[in-house]
Image 1 (tube, rainbow, N blue to C red):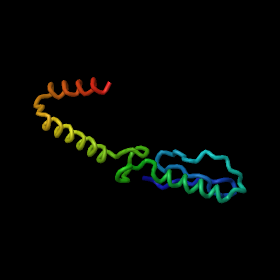
Image 2 (cartoon, helix red, strand yellow; image 1 turned 90 degrees about the horizontal axis):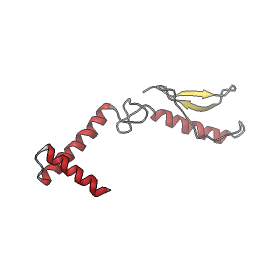
Image 3 (cartoon, rainbow, N blue to C red; image 1 turned 90 degrees about the vertical axis):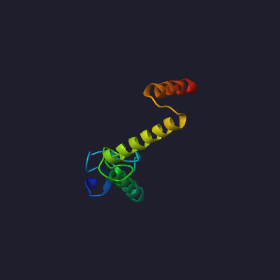
Image 4 (cartoon, rainbow, N blue to C red; image 1 turned 60 degrees about the horizontal axis):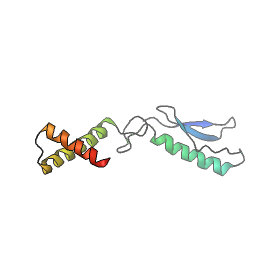
Length: 112
């Protein structure tokens, strides 16, 4: 994770921040006059918060592509989903892949 990069006006007022990793700039999309200093500061702070979260895992905060899950958390999600599927199969008495696929097909038809 890289530090946010401040983006400023020619006078030096910071108006937004870019992600130090991918360069993405987050902003509120408002058009503000240079005289609206309080609103500009709020927008800049909001932009900094977004830039801080960009390229970090939404679960653990490790480096990850743009607010998604890192490899470790992604694997963990997959593991727990798979474990849940195994538990469901055991509960239903399904012991073969063909029976599991048939059960999934029935479930899909029931949802339509």
